[in-house]
Length: 86
Image (cartoon, rainbow, N blue to C red; front, side, top):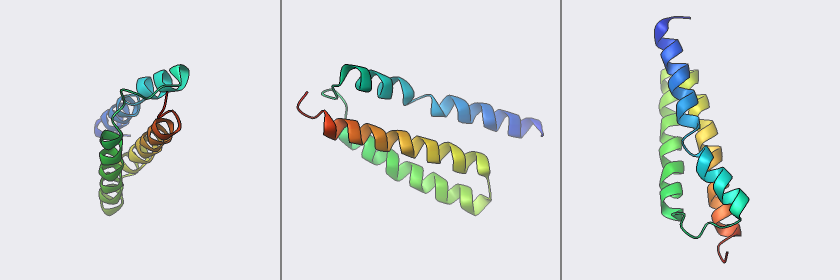
């Protein structure tokens, strides 16, 4: 594995953790009152585009990172809708 791939995997891990604190906080508090639904909808569109780019480039780091990010953004949308009155 070359240094570019190592940097890519590290960047991927850091990227995946960007939504994690919000997911955990929303889950624990059972409240998504201050969470922007539009932000996570835009995030999903962004992840789909990154996945398509990763497929075109045959880059598994980009593909896997954005699949995980899309799952977390989808989970946040679910939590936002589930706790909309909380």
